[in-house]
Image (cartoon, rainbow, N blue to C red):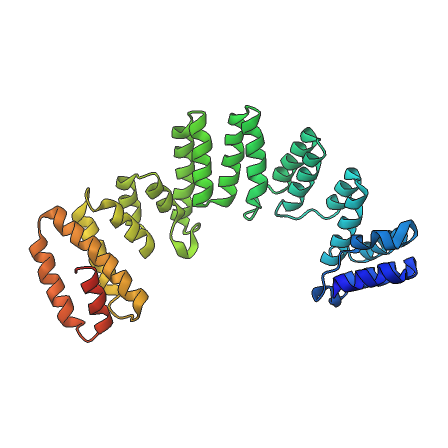
Amino acid sequence: MAAAHLDACRAAGPDPQQLAEWLVGHVLGDGNDVTEVDPLDYADVLGPCGLDRMRRLAAEAHRRSPSGWAEQYLMERLVKAEGNVDALVTLFAKDLAPSGITHLRIAEELDAAGREDEALAWAERGLRDTAGEAHVDGRLVDYVCDRYTRTGRAAERVIVRRDRFRSERSLAAYQQLRTAAQVVDCWESEREAALAVLREDARQGSGGGYRGPVLLDALLDDDDLDAAWREAAGGADDRQWQQLADLSREVRPAEALAVYLRLIDQVKEPTGDRAYERMATLLQGARDCHRALDTLDEFAAYMSALRVELKRRRKLMAILDRHRL
């Protein structure tokens, strides 16, 4: 429909100003949800007079609703078509998103124009403007860090990742800090400080939410099992307990076995393929622990009792058979 309309306009040659008014109304109205019309496709029909009328209408609409998505889109398209990067930066700068995504878009536009120093300055401003925000667009942080890496500023990259970690307190931010710090051989001191922050979060019951403390995820990711076992006793969710047990089958089989048996008891009640497959996975872990402890006879007896207890669940029995349990 949109293509047919454009062809019709080219054939009929409507009044440029009336066409401009219709196009602006269409883009800003509900109709554009049905047919996505790009006003710039009509540039040859509009001519200088129609394009000028469209710019004035778009500017008026943007002044009335500076945060409107359609108004912003229309202004961006028109300004970008003019090739005026400074005007586009000015437009973006009027409504900087708290996530930093607008700063990144400005940086990318300046990059495309070959103005790399200004681009980095805007991205760095984005980090300053969003400092302390828990939810910052990771692409902005990555942009600055990539630039620092390319220009030999690895130590400053660590600072950026450290600041982001202290605001975000996630496993991903911890991993990114570790990667940056290892490049300049300062991970030992950075890790100590980062874990201290996560320990305080765990003590206060913040950080991690329903997924369990980030501290434990960080220790597991570092393969620091001794510390992970100590911290898990203070609070961990079932996902973290299972991961800890999975990593400890060979080195701490008795402790891992106790975790598996507790988790198996929890999945006896639920039914369905997902619950049955999880039970099979946990039983395989328990079997590995018994093998490490040289107590496979005990596991055989446990399985016999479990099969008797749950024998009415034929689908479960089939899944256990398939896993040779």
